[in-house]
Length: 96
Image (tube, rainbow, N blue to C red):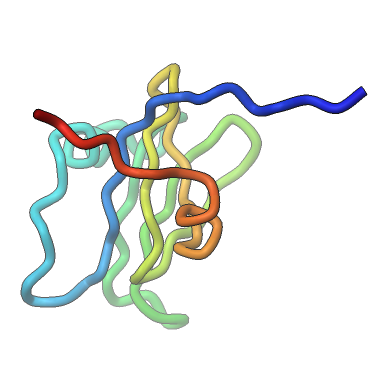
């Protein structure tokens, strides 16, 4: 059998770590207060390996680096996504 992935509407914010960075949406800033619980974020701008955002998922701590997208899924779960995967998987919804 072959299967087609159902379309799922998600929220996403691209973290660039630049001075002209778009403000994060409220679901990102709210997640900062949930760390280290699942769904929480930890912003680590001074990490020895470079700036990063840690995301507590059900499976492990996922790492986002500048340029990655932070995605809020169907059930409110958060996860990082590399730009090339994001672009191949999602397309913007145009609001009228």
